[in-house]
Length: 167
Figure 1: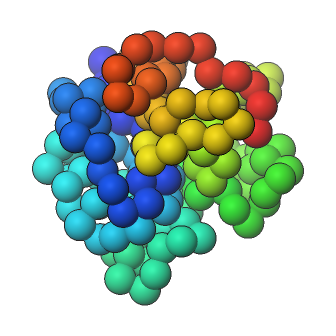
Figure 2 (figure 1 turned 30 degrees about the horizontal axis):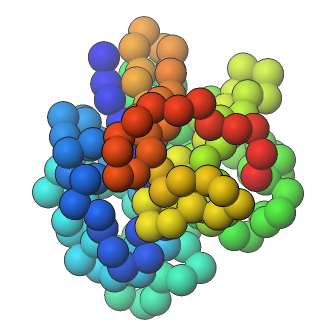
Figure 3 (figure 1 turned 135 degrees about the horizontal axis):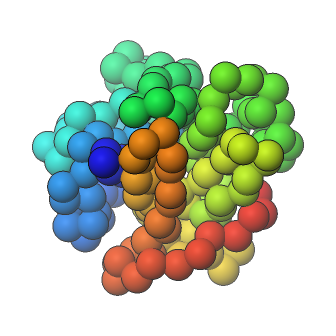
């Protein structure tokens, strides 16, 4: 079993409870808008980080991240992007990443877990501040035997909740 922290939209302030909620994950997928390079360095103290840049990230962050990432974890293909280039039509991500089982994006500050056939589009929410009544949040993906499950966690409480299907 592999546990992956999914986080996005820190905007320069990494909440202290993130360290507790992501303790024990095997890796972190960061979906953009770090705001500052030290936010990514702090995440790397928890677990190895695969990060993409978002629309608020400047040259310093973009120098150590990519626009998109794709990786395999225990037979599950993940794609990571910030999502601002397809906003508001996140269905385009299915075409952009045809081999991905799970597409992780940020940008909207709204947690989402939407299944499209056998594929998933996941937004962990914003670790800085939610929008549209959504709480600040992150998510944990658990991969085992080629299957993946998701758990969204509200910040600061760590309370688990079911994410909506909206963008």
